[in-house]
Image (cartoon, rainbow, N blue to C red; front, side):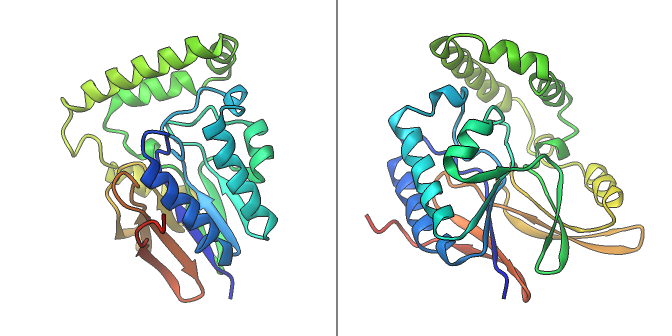
Length: 245
């Protein structure tokens, strides 16, 4: 039986050691028994560029992923809004395959569309404009050409402005747009859809042009961990036990 696991929105950082330990336990336990692990963005709280891979915390995460890949689990990563600057160097060091979104995979014989999820929040036009800007090749090249400390300081400033902006936005504005979901499902032939980003885990049923479609939203790891398992029996969301440490 082919088994695939899915996680997103881990937001790993040194100041949240309990969640980091939980993720390392997950890699050594549940993920080690799976055929594939898909990380659908925001693995890190932020990523300033692959030249920061030598930082001890980042190296520890990369090494743990590489160890999992060495045990035979295939690793796939889709960039999120917090770590869209992850590049080929980090992927190579971690034994991961980078996927462009949206990515159509076949999971246990079911066509399954994978993405981080922020592109579905189309009602938030200010965010979407910002997203388009920073995903441009020219913007990335210019930003990554600056010194690492300068990049880190700018990211911290952007994060603070983002948090302030969120406080003035409604929950509906920051959730997915139903039309955007339908358009995406239609474009890719009405597959199953798995994404994160909204921090609103759950299973949703959609009917698009008469076709029944299943959408799974992954949970964040701010206070606890969870993952989605998909195999020949379908998909199930499961909580993680507390860290063994």
